[in-house]
Image (tube, rainbow, N blue to C red; front, top):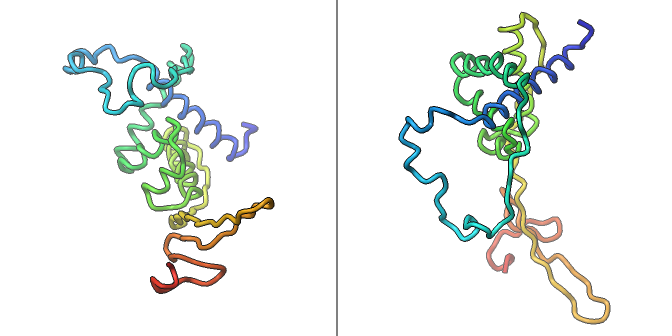
Amino acid sequence: MNETPHELLAAVREILRRAVMTLAALRDPDRRFLGLAQMPAHVVHDVQDAYGYSSASVRDFRPSAYEIEQAEVVLPWLAWLRRAHGDIECRRFIGWSSGAPVWKLAKREKCSERTIHNRLDRSVAIMIREFCGANIPVEIVDEPYKDTAFAAIFERSPGPHERVRVLKVYVAGIGFMKGNKRLRTALETA
């Protein structure tokens, strides 16, 4: 092998991602036997879900025969990962492969986005070690989740040269701030 461990990790991660996408794109022929055939596929709860309200969305991924064969080989790896290391490992990988935003995965697990990427790499390294016999070292990154929610209140000055000035800002975990000072009382905030 002429590949570095990092390239091998990236290649297997991509193969696993394509396998999850392949599984999602294939039809399930046994679905009708599960009692789901009589249920409507999609129930309209909101006007945005109504037919013709929004643009049509089509899956643009069509797996080839090679990708289907490859998925048959590597999808049991994810089943093993779930049995051996827990449900969250498998859910994280499937969510990431399905295109879920990493910040949502990070918020769900209460860690940083960098930690999510590191946990994905460690999961892939575990599968490579178990099924390919190669040991790929991945350093452990475990950073806490940092919510960066903020809201700003602006003031516009009327006139020909309109200017916008920030009056106060709400920062999650700190509260309202004006300038570099935290507003502590309700009178200061108002």
